[in-house]
Amino acid sequence: MAMSQFAFGKINEYKLKGEKLPYHGGWDDNNELSNDPEKILLNERGLPIGYWKGSALSMILDMLATLLAAGDSTYKIGLKGYETGISQVYLCIYPEIFKDNALQEKLINEIIDYAHDVEPMHPGDKTYYPGERTLQTRAKNLKMGITVSEEVWQQVMELLG
Image (cartoon, rainbow, N blue to C red; front, side, top):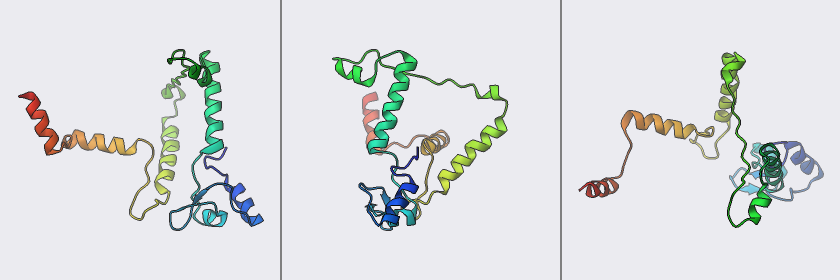
């Protein structure tokens, strides 16, 4: 399953037929959503999963969690007045058992580098992998302290009396 709303092969099919996509499938040169396959292919900036693909992925994950946890599906949970019997699945992986730390680090860094190499929508911006900015903020806060506005600081001081 392509992680974009439309696989780029499918977008190319629409282009070859001279048809527009039935829904927005990416961005054009002006950073506007577009259903024009030629413009989307030119920039290679497809929309992430959503609509039917997002729903399908969500449904598959719900099925897996329901089966693996022997709990209620989201359908059954929605029928209750309150949420109980929620299906949850946790993956606990002990990576050291594989004894290939160098390979793991190489593979992860390839993905991170790929994320960083994606052209940002706005010149001068940067693309980040999920959680990267949180890690940067945490490191900055540990080094320099947490920035608090003067107004909030005064309110805290007033509470302390």
